[in-house]
Length: 114
Length: 114
Picture 1 (cartoon, rainbow over the protein chains, first blue to last red):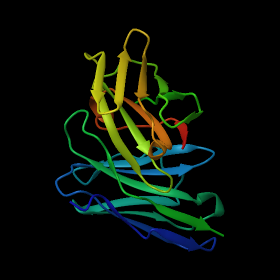
Picture 2: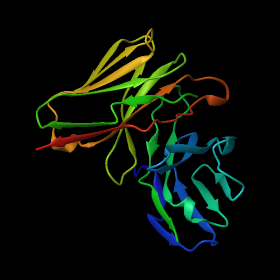
Picture 3: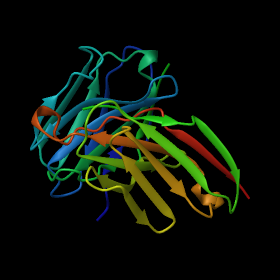
């Protein structure tokens, strides 16, 4: 199993540009999570899906952020327009439904907005 | 969901020594998980302890759980330089819309000197 795959690994963009981060969860996993990690705020849960349906997006910072999961093997997190304060490492994670199932994280996308 | 708080924020030890990290949480849980994050990588699940368990072992890891004090500890015995990482706890109370949802604190940064 290749694990959770995120792309790109690094993204550098200018303020105002649209950014799309991609995630392929582990096959068979029912849950998919998007987290953001910064030194100041730590690891924040942005949104999570169950069976491709968004369950809780209360962590999405503002309307500039949107996430989709069109099928069980793909999810995107889009920022439009991007701002310097969006600079962070964005992680995708997936898990099974069973209570206590561990989260499997990708290696993240390091986003720098200049 | 709820977030655990790890203590201390940073821990520096010599190779071969034991490392103990603590986690406190606020409300009742079904289980608590510990994760490790190496620099530049995603989090990796280490161990899960259920609310009806008091202690659990996995290799050099020993986790305890005291539900009356709402606290857990992670002990790494005979530490190695490769154990250098950040460690996070994630308490979980499965049910309703928070099912499967995990949030993380700031973690404990462990440095093991060779």
